[in-house]
Image (cartoon, rainbow, N blue to C red):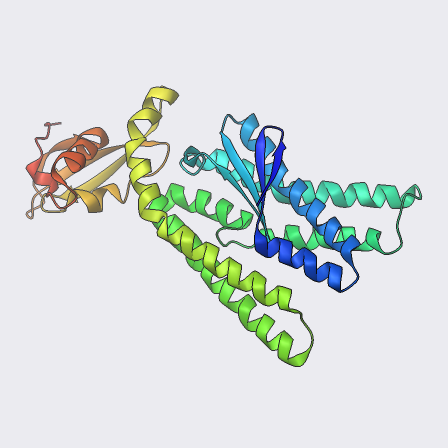
Length: 293
C-alpha cells in the first residue's frame, strides 16, 4: 500500500506490517506500534539518504514486519564499497537514535513507557540487521566482502543461504515460543518473511551475475585504472566457468594452457565476455583467438 513520497522516495506499507500494527491496536499498545513504525522508517531512510549521497538511484521504501526494504539501483551490488556504506547506514542510524533517546532522558524529555521501548526497538533492529544473512544489512556487508574473494554470484548464494538458515531458526524459535508461551506470533512471522526474502535474493544471483558481466567494461571506463587479476585456465574449460571467477573492481587477464601445461595464449576479460555473449557459456576458452605474451 502506497503511503506517499518522502524526500522524493515512494513509501509503501506492506499489508502484513499493517496487520502487525492492527495487532498492536487490539492489544492496546498502539503507541508502541507507532514507535516501531517510526524507528523502521528512519532506519530505511538512512539507507536511502546514504545511497543518494553516493549517487545510487533510490526507487522506493517498503516497510515489512521484520523491518523494511529500500529498493535501489542494482549497480550498488556491483560496487562492494558503496554497498558496505549503504548497508551500514541503517544500524548506525539506530545507534544515533539510541544516543538521542538517552540524551532526551537526561534532559527530562522522557516517557516512562514509550521511552524504554524506543531504546529497545532500536537496539533489537540494529542487532538483528547485523546478522551476516541476506537480505539483512549484515548480509549485504558479508556479500560485499566475499564478492571481492569469490565473485558476485557465489557471494550472493552464500549470504542468502545464511539468510535461509537464520529464517528457519527464527521460525523454529517462534513456533516453540507460541507453544511454550515465551514468544508471540510476530517472531514466527518475522522468520517466515526472512526465509522468503532470502530465497528471493538467492534466486536473483544469476541475474546479478549477468549484470556484473554486462557492466565489466563500464568499470574500467569509469575508473580509468583498475587492479589486474590473473587467472590460469585449461583450454577446454568453458567460458561460463571462467567468468564465475571474475571479481568486482578488478580487470582480469586469462592465461590459457593446454593439457600438457603448454602456453597457448592470453585473453582479456573483455574478450572472454564478448565470446560468452556471442557463443554461449559452454564454449571452451581455447576456441577463442588469443594473443601471445
